[in-house]
Image (cartoon, rainbow, N blue to C red; front, side, top):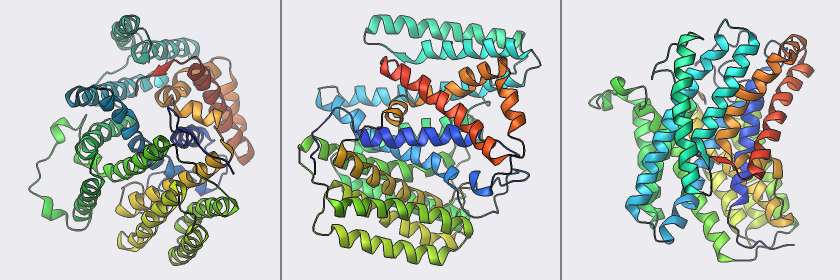
Length: 461
């Protein structure tokens, strides 16, 4: 049994975010048309056509990537802002940093959305590849954080200037059709969740009960929008500014705000210096938490919803029974996860089946619980053996760099040397090579991201 002392970072969050990024890159690069089963793809884009069908209920592990990332983003709110407030930085200054973060992510989303067009250009792969790598280098300069503020400002400004140059070259030579409407929707949603979630945390930083009420209010609004949309007909349309804001983005605050509650709890524990003894009962409970998360992937995908709920309830009882007299931060996180997950399963038949797209309440509540349960398992391992998860943690500390490196560095390089085309061909009809393709791109991402993290070169995010 070991104890955990306070540290500057909450390793559990870094590892959880790193696992998320690993899964994100893997699911985006596993081989299509390689005869892999439907649970290896988004629930609403199944093989063999991979055509989006919102009427297909169920989720797969791929559908967990986005909520896991949103949850860890929310969990990082208190870690990022409370330290600054306690060091004497004013509320106005911290609020201003939230707007700068929103602006950074919004611009990043638009840059990515337009830069993705490079891959569709008719220019030779070598030319496209070098330009994509150059664009990544420019993004690196624009977003990198350096200890020397003067040098950092100079490098960032130079990067912004070169970004304009790249836009001109992309338009004239590669035929890119630049538009503010071309954006990476994932990053755009994160930008909106970051600012609104951050402001909610600022407003409720000393009042968790109020944050719970705000969370319940957002859940209620989501329910009204889903079940009686005519009740919100008076709400103005935001279509004219839809390129950077939509009311639908705010539904994801459910996951982020829940994550912020967990983040505050983890931060309090880290600062307390409390020794947490993790015995065999806690480890067993951690395994039960992970098993409950995996059961959802079976039950909700195969549509054995009633069996899923019963098994999950039994696992919940077992978790509580094992830890009732051994309660600590890990058991609190597990109970938090079970509560959200079980409520989410109840909403499955109400919503006509859980779906990521279009996102429903069952999806948000269930995946919030699944994330917390996974976090409880990771936390148990960390508290017991001080596991740092170096590869996952390295990616978790540098998420934006990790997000962009495959499309703009490793992908172009593999295309230029012919390995990309070879992998595309060999994985056709082969589940084994379909997975290998994804692992090649993902492990390269991990290696590059961890290299920059070790050098303490982080992108603003």
